[in-house]
Amino acid sequence: MKNHIYLLFIVGVLLSGCGEEIPIETEKSPITLSAACDPSLRPIVMVHGLLASGDTYELQFQRFEVNGYCPEYLYVLDWNTISFTGDNAEDKLDDLIDEVLALTGADKVDLAGHSAGSGTAYNYLSDPARAAKVAHYVHLAGNATSGPAGPSGEVPTMNIYSTDDLIVPGGDIPGAQNVMQTGNDHYEVATSATSFSSMYTFFNDGLAPSTTEIVGEVDVNISGRVVTFGENVPVDGATINIYEVDRVTGYRINTSPDATTTSDSDGRYGPVVLPSCIPYEFEVITNISGDRTIHYYREPFVRSDQLIYLRTIPSSGLGALLLGGLPEDDNETVLAFYSGSQAVIAGRDTLTVAQDTLSIPEFASAPNSTIAMFYYDGNNNQVTDLTDIGGTWAAVPSFLAAVDMYFPTDPPSSIMLKFNSRKLVVPNLKSGTDGVIVAQFN
Image (cartoon, rainbow, N blue to C red; front, side, top):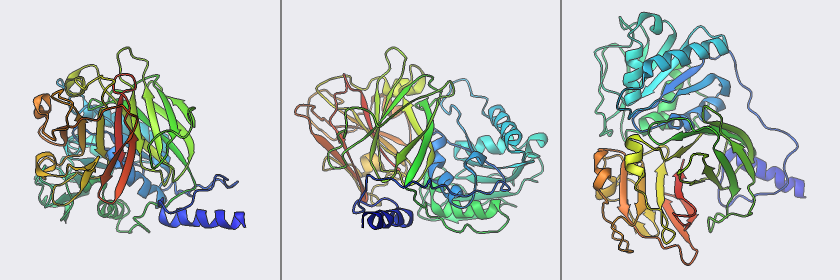
């Protein structure tokens, strides 16, 4: 009878992903589930945009894998989009593509760039030798150009843009395959299932994907990078402790980690094998003096994921200017909301934190396309004022917001965040002793 129940659980996971009503058995299947992949498919390289990292393409990587791509054939370029001196991103992209070609034995790659990353990729393709390494190029939420990519427009180009993207207006590119979307915000042009379907079909010469769903697995392989916020500088030797947490309270189930791993010189960690459909906390402790501990609380994993990025607070640059002033006070919690696949748009989305509605034009206007909000007592009056903290945050014209909210740490309690139909619960940790909390929605 128990085996029958567990079989039903497996079927439920594979068909439906993680649902709160699905029972989670502690017994594990002796069979390791892994999707077959097709090494004849061309490798893909993707470039992120401003203030972003490679995990922009987290959901798209999973969709490509469901449709037969080998995980080893999917790559992202991480670059410093807020460098004051430039990051030589095009040279780094060339080095990465050369590495991918050598590793896979392919003669060309398929390339995609989002937002500022589309500019990097398009400029990269203006060189004949570099353009010869790329079979197809997808221009995601980028500025309209005079023609397809390549010195003479010879690289087959798909241009995907949305009329509801208020960050980059976009528009048709003469000679390209143009895909105009409606309803998708700037970030969704890169992350949505509709964009995946267009990209897959373009990369595969008109063949549509078998599904755009992210098919679940019973056990998942989790890996990624530890990098600094904004600058994407790899953090070497960071300890990542992974804890199962109570989905109702956000507190750890056990005092000892369920898994521990360490980042290497490139910031990479894992893979770590975890049961799916369970909420986890990722505690990130660097070996750098003065660094804050960061606690990432994530929605349950449905499928193996190689793009779980853990950002730390940098010691210099714009990232440090913004985040260096976060309180370190054992009397209050410092909390951040992050959405990995879409912006919060007032009038379209609903975001509440501790029952306060924050999906309002002041913090979540369509032109700002907010993907991250920071919550702390900005004026030190120990009251939630729900006002824009302003200050250095005003230096960032889009994507980020900071709201005056006071979360006392005594007594220990929980903070609930609801984003549309989903929710995360986190504990009210002490920002001085414990560090900063990030509640991340996929």
